[in-house]
Image (cartoon, rainbow, N blue to C red):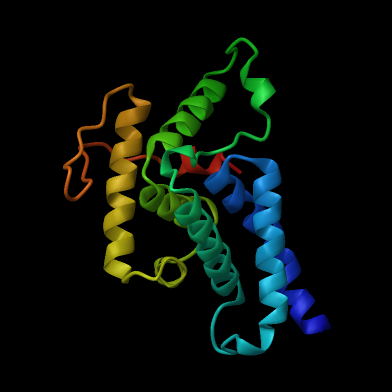
Length: 185
């Protein structure tokens, strides 16, 4: 039991960030993390010993969140919560605050698939392989989604409308700096 706690406990802040990024609701995010931890503890014996505990926990959390999303059928409600939203209401004395606000607004407008891959790779520092495991997609899909998500986010932050291909969801131009994603933490 103590080995399990040693492996799980350090992951809780990252799980909470990811849950908040998916739900935009603190209470719902906390409930989601609690459900994830309960499931992880009750199914600890099912975990593959050779796999990453971090990726396994994110997989559980992601699957729970997507199950809830399917139940509610309201994908556009998912967004990024700014933990200090009141600080953004103050006059924009620093360009960084404005960039942060624009970044959060841009993330809110991304599809769940693109937002998830950006959060997992860009914020939580999961490897492409771990992200592929969490999202249950091939590594190539992770790289492709990440590239498209960065392009869409960059365009949104520049104030442009995203032109999407209705079939692929592809967007146009511009890399997003990793430093922008780090500001979400």
